[in-house]
Length: 244
Image (cartoon, rainbow, N blue to C red; front, side, top):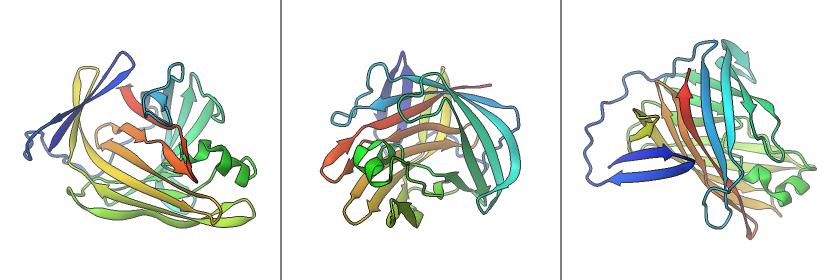
């Protein structure tokens, strides 16, 4: 099944075309070709914990600039360093932060990926002394994966307070999607992540939809509202507006 996703005037629209075949050309390269100095502009909104709809006033334009490629970071080589400038960072988000991406054999690793919803939950923050959880490297996408392929994106013990918690992220490849951004059609690999955090007294779970294109990198990322204990936590949606 092929999906078309459109962004228009601050509203995200998802159109799903029926049928199992697709006339979208396959992705030819298993890597995102980052170039130092390239700039990507994204738009992000928080999602209501209960409805999953964008929260008015939470819009954040993110200007991401590739600083360098081919470096080593936290045990990974061939790492790309990207600096992000936020127009409306919101609570707990710095005006400037950094993204690290590592790539090898079609695997697209993202440092500390997918925890945005869990890391805004007050119970998690209180349990962790006000600090955000750090998961390390997470296998965000497999750029040569076929539909139905599953993989363990992260299976690690992470520090939370004076104890440790188990984070298990299981990902599964969905069908490739066509995203319409600024009148241009972009073909992206679509994977769904199922995150589960078990810290004994604190447990959390959530889903993330990620869409990564070899031409443009991450094009759409949907961190669905997570559930921590018995409460729901706001999510986040981020879409690429343009590449400069």
